Image 1 (spheres, rainbow, N blue to C red):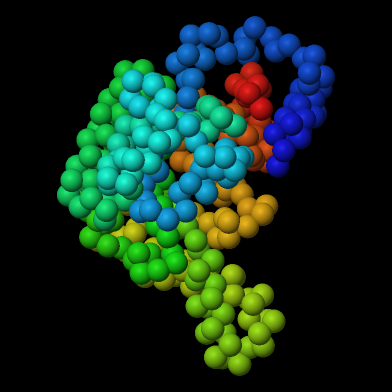
Image 2 (image 1 turned 90 degrees about the horizontal axis):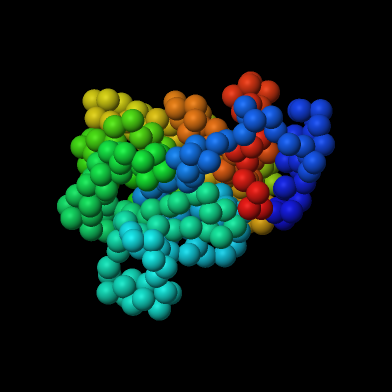
Length: 303
């Protein structure tokens, strides 16, 4: 969606909710975020975990409503040139401390872990140390707020490998919510389609039924039972989402955005997340109606 059109929709919605004009409306002093609060809650920080080609970049682009790549900064806040990043990748180097920021939505700051299978014990210890450090930061904007753990479903890596089990069993994330994101979920549609065909269903009907049957089978399948079984997993995630067809035009991360908002117990962080995301107008409407988004002053103007 074009950012300017989205901004217009937010303004029209604000007019409906407040009964005031969007562009000319000045919020009352009590509802305007004070400078110290804007500084305190300036950025929403997310760690995204997953192997290469797990669909992580596509998800972040959808969340930030862009097709461009992010700008990368080191831990000192200095921009890293693309040539240096390329050379580092070629050497197999990766720094979880680097910050990824999309110019279309600088309110989000992302950190990337290449997946625990990639670096074995070494990568696990880096992730564990990063989470422990970021959970203790005194400044809220420097803390880690959410973890998205991506598991692609297009190959055997969709299974729970030793690295994944180790993370969910031994990595203490404290109060930071973890959401499992099953990416490339549409890969399972072909499996269900083939099964329906073998059962005598026509090709057209099988193609139509495959997505729903896949969701039903997955919901009752062994992976989710394993993921949420405390006997198998010591630290189950807060929830999970399934994201199919993210590479298609018009795809969006609505389910991921919605579930992330639901997992945030801190209302200030919840408001920050809802107003930082710029792709889900329905979510803003939902929380505004519930009275949990009392002012649109948190919604940034960098559209």
